[in-house]
Length: 507
Image (cartoon, rainbow, N blue to C red):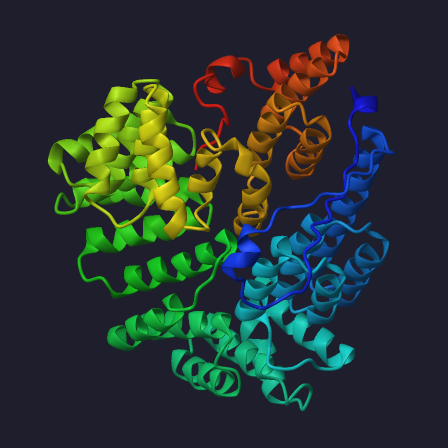
């Protein structure tokens, strides 16, 4: 099997780059250059080098060995082959650490296209200072960030920042002083310095996010909520940065809510958005015991968390409990709809999706209705709904992927949009690979599968779709080996990969 996968370099060739993306660009087809001159072992070597170098750089940064961390990242940047996915992924991490020179270097090496544009725009909006400083001063500030965030040295580091002239011209320095005071629980001075940073750079959303948290912790609720509204007005396109904004929102709501159970609800949601689902469920379970006032909301959120963590029985149990108490609980109704669809109870899923649609302005229930119609063999209704939604929602991830089931000819148009929304969503690449295999486009299928391999080489779906590709190419023995690997990772893969769900995609 290792000799039969190819390295594919995605080169999306769009002319020109703009900070905002026009509708015309969104509709332009994706052009891919395929380079089929390397075996899977080469891809493994490349991945192992990049991942090991990144792990080393990250660990050294956390341990406050910042110069060595910067050198590791610099080596990665210089030696890594051109790969937009990898460059974006690690560019965001370098920007988070304050290595803006390296992040900028990676950005400059990206193809100027739709695939990268939204991520570049969001990264700069969220992290970047108003101007760059010299490397020596940048390393000094990065070391301060490491000590404040990872090494429990907020008080000492803040004092040092205040007593040095290093990087005085940088708004980022004021942000770090504010962060240090915040971590030291000196909220008054934290607010002073974050206001200084914002005065110098009022477009940095990371600064506004810290200000919202400081105000919320200071019990200045109305000001915290006002700052939160400022943040929410910024049109982030990518799921990575939308999630950061939602995380700030739930933290502020947790701090500003008065009822104990409601505070726990928002704290649980905050932990969930931080990918700390175990903490989230503990907080929410505790809230159920202490108060019944918001039990339906808590049940509904628990159902969604369990569903998104593939604990379907628990998800269904809490969704039903929430629905029993409140027939208008959106998360519960949506979860019951999704569970019904996955169980192929399409009449029930249609019923629940229609209920959910009445409870929200979100598009997800409408997508659910359309895919239920398709599953019920009503393609005309389904297609009509998708086409109507696509006119108004050009960047909804689930809509784009699900619509391909009935409008497959638009794959080359929607891929740039999907990738620009959430380039790390493995199921998207796997779904597109499945479509390409069925369409007989084996080169494109290999392209999508190689993206999937980089994201998670142990994903059972990757080996399943690879087996389909190999079988379609007549390489039956290798296909069987790939399917064997799939079954070793996930014994009940056939039940999980519902044949009625063409893309195996779940939000």
